[in-house]
Image (cartoon, rainbow over all chains, first blue to last red; front, side):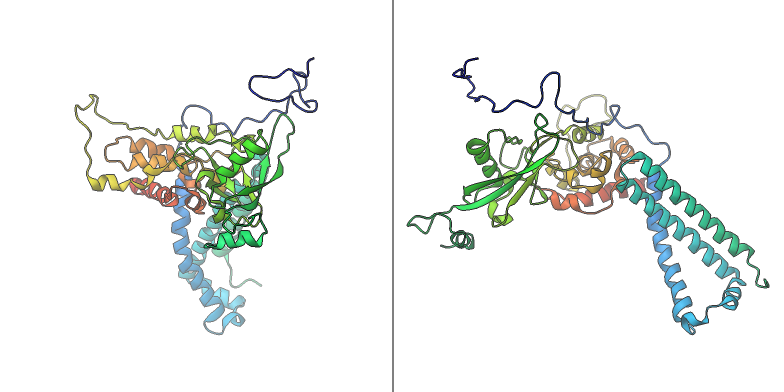
Length: 160
Length: 259
């Protein structure tokens, strides 16, 4: 092999042996997260839109519900020291407070769960991780909502 | 010695033999190098340059490529902020190398230059733009009209109707916005700000009749609803497009269309 050989393009000889050749090719760069098909298929339903809208609307309602709740529970009429079994029993005797608490429970749980769902979607990269995290999230959400609803509807002030 | 930048150059003790008006300073460019034929790992490499701080980062890259290391790979075409080829992450922020003056990004410290994030790096600062352009194609960025016969004269539009989408006509498809979006970084399936901006340009064009179709496309699971309004895109846009606002306008159009 002649060392004086020069290429017309002016590219000098490569120093050192290449780590890769035909038998030992360079590591394959994974193809980018490809979109399949020419254009995205139209979505059945618009869950994402409804979820987005729900976050805004439930957020507005929750501001009223939660601030009212905090005010009643912690500030007005003696503050937190007044809260006891009798206080809860007295409040839940009225359908108004039952509905208030039920609404707050459902909206807050769904609002929070949907927020966490988007966080998982945005930050959990592997499909398996997503699956498990969301499974855990949905289980916890359903359990809490059902338990809370059950308590509100079947609360017995005369329990001993 | 008129400008503070030149004073700084003096303090750094750069050569100005006899003349106080040498414009050159020594700046370090810390460049993210990646060559798949050598290693699967990307590494930082420093280059020290004598350079006029009034020059651009692109000039520095040229200097490195032409005088120091010819293997440095990056894209640039017009070099004047129009073609959108040289978007890169400079000092941690997405910018066009050809529109960023060195004096504006604190040359006292090493200036980091990386490829834009969220797209596969092919070599050094060159990334695979295919997913980005696929999202762009998906929103059908061309005029669609209902009439079957081509009109014999131009399609007229009032100044107000033109003003409605003026902001989003400025896009140069540099991908600075899309590759600054944390939602896009995650799995690259989100359409990304740039595609939505270009859909917006036609959705709000009074001459176009396919707004409904484009809205339907952006109503996708990976469409506008994944936007978290972090405003990274608006900050990154070298054309000053209010990207996040455009995305919100598309969302609003989707909602008001339904309810």
